[in-house]
Length: 72
Figure 1: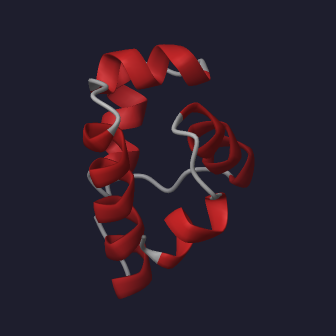
Figure 2 (figure 1 turned 90 degrees about the vertical axis):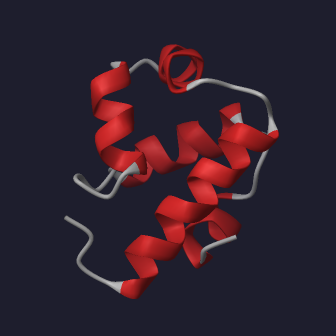
Figure 3 (figure 1 turned 135 degrees about the horizontal axis):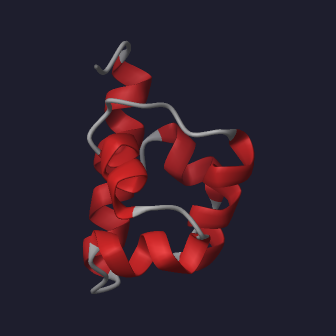
């Protein structure tokens, strides 16, 4: 469950960046070495990622992790 507005903005930014790069959840999850179910939980606000996961996701999306964390 999304606990804060910041977390909600992060989730929206993550989804927008993934879709903007034309990647499915499965494709992105494979790129960063986690399961699609785990990635889905992160993107949908049911789970919070570790900082290292945020960095790996940002690298896979060619995005700045600070921008994702700030909500895009």
